[in-house]
Image (cartoon, rainbow, N blue to C red; front, side):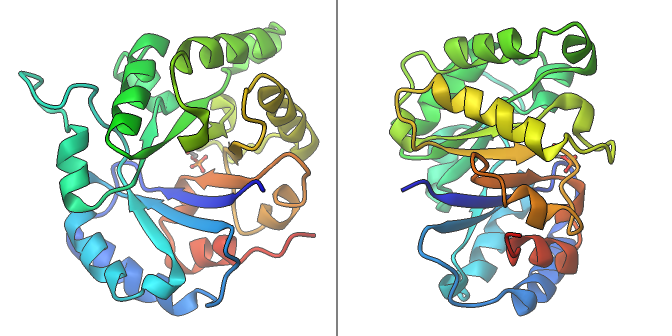
Amino acid sequence: MRRIAIAGNWKMYKTQVEAKEFLTNFLAELKSGSADNKLTLLFAPFTTLPVMLAATGAYGSYGLNIGAQNLHWADNGAFTGEISAPMLVELGIKYVIVGHSERRQFFGETNETVNQRLKAAQKHGITPILCVGESKQQRDRGETEAWIMTQLKQGLEGVDQQNLIIAYEPIWAIGTGETCEVAEANRVIGLIRSQLIDRNVTIQYGGSVKPENIDEIMSQSEIDGVLVGGASLDAKGFARIVNYQSL
Ligand code: PGA
C-alpha cells in the first residue's frame, strides 16, 4: 500500500523560540487517531531540531516526525558548514530532504551530489525525500519529461526505492502562489511512478500548496502527499493541510 506523507519544509525560517510556539499551536489543532498509513513530517532548520524533537516526543500519538533539510554524503571530514548523517541519527532524525530546487539553484547541487546524499541517508537508516522538477523555461520548451527522467535516472542510481519518498516540485510553482494544475501534477507524478522499480514509492506534489487547494490535490489518484513550504509556517494553516479531507 502506498503511504500518504504530508510534509512541511520550513526552509530558513524560525528560531527555537518560534519553533516551540508553532508546535504548541499546531499540535492543539491536529486531529488524533490519524490513519496508520499517514505520515506527518516537518523539516526544520538544524538549530531547531533538538527542541522540536523534545517537544514532539510527548505527542507521539500524533505521529509527527521531525526531519532535516539536507545532509552531507561523508560521515565526517573537512566540509565546513555541512551536517552528516551520523550527526542527525544521534539526534533521532529519520527523514531528510535531498536535492530541493533551492539547493540545486543556489548551492550548486547536481544530480551526482544528490545521488551521493541519498545513498548516505539510506546507509544510516534515514529516509530521504528526493525533490525533482522543471523550471518555467524547461516547461515552455517542452523539456519537462526529459529533464525529470534525467534527474531520476542519475539521482536514483544505486538508491534503495523501498526507503524513499519522491517530491515532484515544478520550480515555477514554488513560492509563487502559482499552483500546477492538479491534473497536470497528477500526470507528471504518474510518469515518475512509471519509471520506478518499486511502483509503491510515495510521491508528493510540492509548489504553492495551501489550505485552499489541499483537498483537491489529495483527491488525485497518483498524488500520495504534499511538500509544503510557505504555508507550513503558519500553525493553523498547516494543521488544516494535515487534516485535509480528500474531495
Ligand atoms: P512553497 O514551497 O509551498 O512555498 O511553494 C514548496 C517547497 O519549496 O517545498
